[in-house]
Image 1: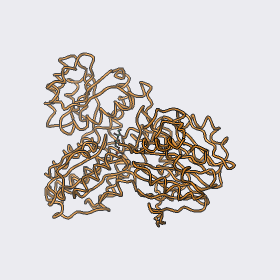
Image 2: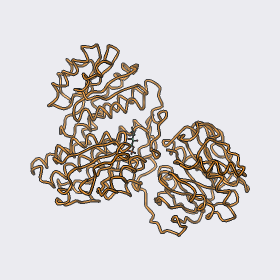
Image 3: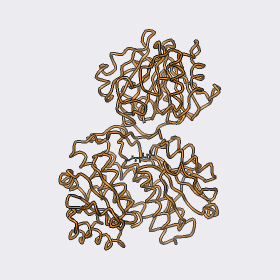
Length: 608
Ligand code: F6R
């Protein structure tokens, strides 16, 4: 939520900042702004609307002359998305400009204090207090002003700070939220995400909570909360800028759907050597694993849906009880979790605030934490005891696709590995499961190839007001994700329901206007699903069936059909979601929706 970027060096800052901002726009896109130091002053342009709009207002940044500055793209928390509430925010006399990602929880008290001192606020944001505090505490020592200001703040914040009286000098601060420093030659950067920097440098420093940094063109210095210098290691980003570009696709979402065979391969293959699963970055002994009396999986949104699939698969193979719980709920409970609980946290971004809070809560009760994460060096990856990186590559579209399927692949790997360690599968079944894991990339490609007609089905069904996704067991978990995908990008109301539960009330909503997407990919439950399909058809609903390739009975039951290639039943969710991702994409496209940046959403939900 909100993207920030800073640059100091010999080049014109604004075009570089706008380019970085464009790549961060998935984090928030209701307004944007840029500020540069120029002739002893701060020159700022900010406006409601997209980064492209801001670029239009500044001639692509060329009209803002200056070699050091900050920029921001916003996802509104405090104050409506207006020109005035857009970041950066200036201090009373224009000495300081600040950009911010997060929430200053004590901003109301700080605002009253500053107003009582005669300061007039321009915006409704929580951020503006930071600019005024900086000016209040600045006595010629910028580092001290930053430290005094930060000591007054409560909440979550990543800040970028520039001062008109300190040419070529930037500060940035991290307290809950992502912040990366980029090291160039004679120029330096900071940003919310490496995607903003990778076109210019691949050498980065991941900042920790409680740290702040000072940047000049020549030098980057990182400090801890007390102002003591900290030695940081420099990491090298392994992917290229092409990975963060659309590569000829109309939308990132479609590009990322098409990338799934390779992404799943990147998750699975490096962990399988000579027919055996091995994780490079963690190990558990059989005795340790036997010491856990349950596994708790926690996550948000699609990652939670992956966790629901994980419950079926881990319980099915390992016979350990698994609870899957929404992180936003878990964090405010008094959960029964101790040293005998293995916690699995799932997150594409590794920065989701609720997931981090739930994770901290469980770890404080003694649970060991295994994180399944995509973004290397993210907060969740750093807090966890062990990490399985999904290696999906950058995911830019707000609606996750390859993020989700690679989470499934990582969960499957873990389940098979743990089942073998516990002696719950024999050598023959283990070998079969490992082969099935290696087959997943091919099945994903097959799922794409099998469903070229999905575009025409979307043309036919895009006018729906509301629809249901139904399924049983793993298919129910897939229904949740299929339904979320559709609603978040097409704005059509949709609900996932356990097929057998429909008749306990919700069937009252089924009538001849309703489309029901019936997921029928669990062989043992096919007949049960046929009964549920009959129930909704008897009430006039139309049915879009999802069935395994080669199943002909579905034609007699459903009005239209999508296919999922056949493979290991336990892993069916992974290829099965692909036609539903495509369906959601084409329905949204048909309805003219903003596919990569749906309304009200942001990619990385770093506020509660
Ligand atoms: C939906 C979607 C979200 C995320 C959720 C968790 O398409 O992307 O529901 O899955 O916000 O995000 P991460 O995985 O980054 O923790």
